[in-house]
Image (cartoon, rainbow, N blue to C red):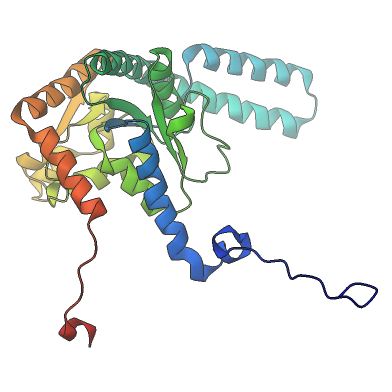
Amino acid sequence: MSGNGELKNVPTIKAYKNPDFLGLPTSRHVRIMCELYEPMQRLDQHNIDNYFIIVGSHLVMHPEDRAKHMSDLEQQIKKLTAEEEVEALRAKLRFSQKMQAMDKYYVMAMELGKKLGEWNRQRAAKGLPSYHVSTGGGPGIMEAANRGAYEAGDKTLGFGASRPEWGSLNKYVSEEGAFEFHYFFMRKFWMAYKCMGLVVCPGGFGSLDELFELLVLLQTKKISHPLPIILLGEEHWKKTINFNYLMECGMLTQSHIDMLAFKDNAEDAFQYLIESVRKAEESGETEQVETAKRRRLEAKPSTPSKKERS
């Protein structure tokens, strides 16, 4: 009511534009559906048929960036006098020195991303289905793979997961391929849904999680098509996971180990991936896989019987 006693029209807001409503626990299913269908629509819109996932540590750097980072730390240490501040920077320097040996994987991931980006552009020129480079969108190995594909002039994808310590996705992710998920299981779904190959560089829990998740999906036939899994850095991975012991005690068989391919450089990893694509396309598996995926995603739920409803 206005000051002169006149009634005013009541403002309204549509439910689907109401942020207070959309943020409620009771609207969780709406948010989940958004994270299911918006990526599907965007991937289709930009003709992104398939992708290779490249994962690894977010802590590695390009060797040149590492050298500059360490030089900056040394200069800062020289200028400080407070012992606590000096020791904090020395700890950072020691950690950076430890990580230096792993920075070679940044270069490998960048080289692999570039090779795949160039190969994918050649396919596009022939009208063939696409295979883009995709990562978790963060720094380190993820940045390196995206950077390589970006420098090749190809679209590159990043599936982010609301990581405040990373901020936004790295600068080499294409705008049309930049996704950020609130629900981790939806991120996992989309990383696996169009994945036709996984390359795992040395990393921590996140990289191990991606590796074992896809291995389990393959073992349980939830993924029924051939999906190459490459562990980049054979010596590192055989120290990290004692596959031989797991076989000795009966936890794994040779068929499980055969699901993995160990490679030590970008060229070998690249050749292994494109050979897998070649075989799948020649056998007709690629087209069958895409058709089956589309049918499952767009299938309408069946009407329950009277017995199921009771």
